[in-house]
Length: 227
Image 1 (cartoon, rainbow, N blue to C red):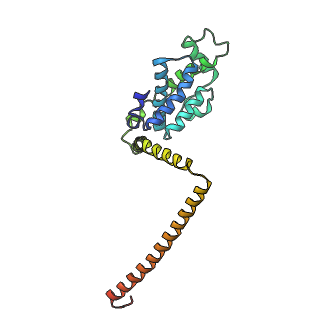
Image 2 (cartoon, rainbow, N blue to C red; image 1 turned 90 degrees about the horizontal axis):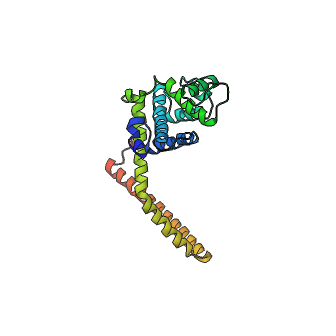
């Protein structure tokens, strides 16, 4: 999954973290259906890729498509309908029968069987949308998705590099504050307040003085001409 997500910005218009989070969410359903190892990884990553294709094909966001796919795996048929997928009990049972998950359509499907059958039906009914992101990646909408995902990856990378420094600063601040007692805190607060007041007055005085000098210079330059 990590390898899959490493290039997700260009391939799917999703940041690495978005792709990993989506795969983890889909993985919960795959695990509940008894999938493990490579089967579980493929189940999850295929749905992540599909969410990008559905978003591209249906002019929506990968997040909305992923939510609709998750709802379908939970047995909610309505959200996925906007993407042209029709799920009902009869369709799921027929698919489960074709997959040899059941021997007859008379009984009810187990939650595990529903997940596997729903996934198979979704993949069949979204054939036209599959691969749409790659096919239209040069378009404005998908280029914008790629740009946003790339920027998010860059933010994450910068944040990770700065994290040790930030953590060190927090540790030092905590140690400093931990050594203070109430009297020290009050003295420190008074000192900060005094400094802020003095600095503010100094800046204000300097500003007035600078403005006066600027006004005089302008008058001298223009010869006092009004215009």
